[in-house]
Length: 167
Image (cartoon, rainbow, N blue to C red; front, top):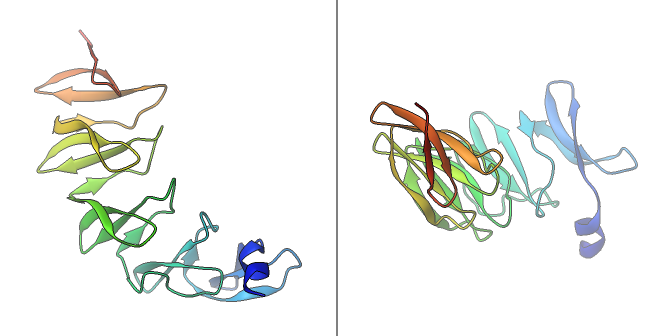
């Protein structure tokens, strides 16, 4: 029965003012008690209620017994979470693998943009720095490049750190 439930497709659905999860036959499997919910990704969904976010499995259990200020879905086994104003990357066991950061973007082209001590840098999908926090501003990566501002100079930078200054 547990395997059957784990393989079941669950879809978030609003019911009045709250969100729950229905199965493909339209039956609520997880009652509509949440303020918001993401679709299930990698076996868990992010749910929010009363300014708290946490991860639930398809049995509606808080899988890490933790609450966050904000959380994003898992991608490749890693998820960004905000705990009391600081951002971290956690693994599928709920353990911090990177952080704390002042700010952290959602993943774009398998890169996270981070802010630490008023400087921006970038992490790979495993939480390792590919660009140390040294930029005044760093955008999300698109088509292999991100814009940056460094000491008043504008330009683009590749994931490998090659820069192209705008003049």
